[in-house]
Image (spheres, rainbow, N blue to C red):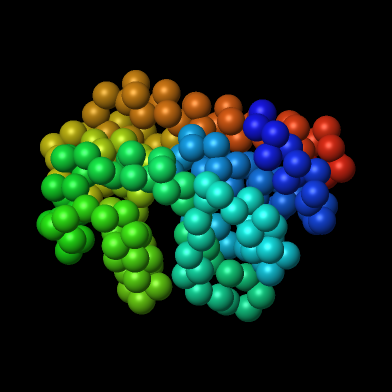
Amino acid sequence: MDLVIKKWIANSTTTDISSCYFCSNIGVVYLGVKPAEILNVSQAKLTQCILLKKPLRFKILGKKNDKYKLFVYNPKKLEETINNKYTLKYLKQLGYSKHFNLDNYVTTLTNKLKYNHSFPHEIGFFLGYPVKDVLGFMGLTQLPLAKTMGWQMYGNTDSSEQLYYHIKSVKDEILNYAKQTQIKVC
C-alpha cells in the first residue's frame, strides 16, 4: 500500500462507514488504478481530498444540501486513458476539441456534468471503462450486452472482468488497511 494513502487514512478525522468507502474510491484514483471517479462528499471530506494534492485534481460539479459533487482525477492516468485514437475519435464526434488537450477535455466533460442534469455516456471513457464497453453502452457497436459488473460489459468480458477485479482488489486492500487503523467501522 502506498505510504501517502496510509498517512491519509491515519489522518482521517471522520470515523463513519462512508469514510471507508470514500478512502477506497479516491485511493484507486490516487494510485492510478482508475483515471477518475465522481464522488459526493461533505465539506470535511472535501478538505481531506485537498490533503492528497498531487497527483490528483478536483473539479467541483455542484453542491446539494451539505454535499459536494466532485470529479476527481489523476491527470497522468486520465491522459494515458483517453489519449488514444479510438477514444479520441468518438470524443471528437461528441463535441470535444479536434486537438487533444487534457484540461480542455476535462472542462468539456465537467461542463456537461454541471449543466446537462444527466451523465453524458462518454463519461465511461474518463472513468477508465474499456472502450468496447463504453461504445456498447452508447449503442455504437454490435457487441451484445454480456453482463454487468460495476458497469455494463459487452462482447467478450475477459479484459473487462480483469479490470473490474483489479479495481476491486485495490479498493479491498485500502478498506482492509482502514479497518486496521482508527477507522474501526469499516
